[in-house]
Image 1 (tube, rainbow, N blue to C red):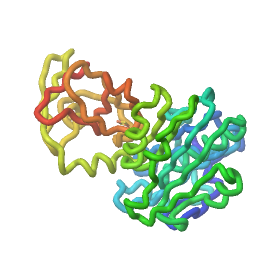
Image 2 (cartoon, rainbow, N blue to C red):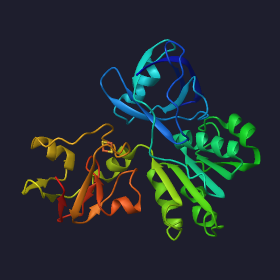
Image 3 (tube, rainbow, N blue to C red):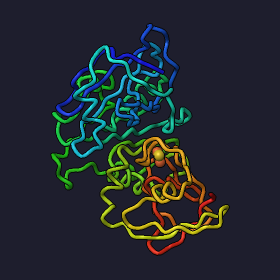
Image 4 (cartoon, rainbow, N blue to C red):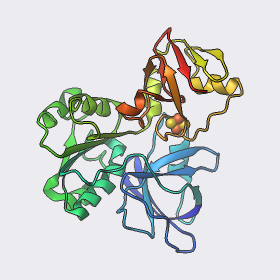
Amino acid sequence: MDVVVRSVEAVAPRIKSFELADPAGAHLPAFTAGSHIDVTLPNGLVRSYSLLNDSRERDRYVIAVLHEEAGGGGSAWVHESLRPGDVLEIGAPQNRFEIDEGGDHNILIAGGIGITPILSMAQRFDELGIDYRLIYCTRSREDAAFCAHIEERHGERATLHHDGGLRERSLDVDELLRVREPGTHVYVCGPPGLIAAVRKAAGEWPQGTVHFELFGAVRAGAGAAAENKPFDVHLRRRNVTLHVPADRSILDVLAANDIRVRTVCRDGFCGTCTTRYVAGSVEHRDGVLDEEGRKSLIQVCVSRALPGDTLVLDL
Ligand code: FES
């Protein structure tokens, strides 16, 4: 569908927020907290952005975009070219980071631009009168977006944690999650290191109580690229074995062999390229699959087999 940019606001030195509305002023499709939309940019790139506004609002979607110098150019175009009055093509909201409204206590942890879905979630818990805490980690207050809104709306429930870019001052998630009160869920969205730390600290929590969404899994993939090792994939239904070199993804190799897998983000966070595997060991690098899903599914755009292994895909 087409939407029009109603307003643009610089909310931090490298973050702008964009208010999108129906061009004719009609209601937009409803969404739930944690949802994202896929935005098609004029150069054909598709980027996913979380909706940060109150999920009861039907007259607008609000997204916030971090200008990433090392990105694929999508955020640069959005920052430099997108103006009020412009029309954008977007997909209907989808939610792969849903909240469980049955929890009694909720710990919401955001790192950097990962604040966007967390804001909508906090708003929702507030509306429902369900207990929550919001912890927002950034390097400094200047790097943080929406501070005034968070303080005003969430008051003492919100903690702004600034680490100055120093590892030794980063949020102590082990301490934060050490004792789990019954009925507690944790939600985390941010860079790979933060998500990994939370998942590790909550490793013993009951299944279904640890929820996460990775922002920019491409960065995780890029970080690991230097350590990529070759491996083989065997396509069970076709009975062919393909070699995946260190500098190619499974998706690249499948495409080179005319095997089409649907993709959107190619960054491991939209969930479109999910493929079933039946044997082999996977190094999961995505931000969408939970522990259960990872036992039989792989995002072929970013994840890999363990070096030297043969991964058997249900293709
Ligand atoms: S294409 Fe989005 S997760 Fe693979």
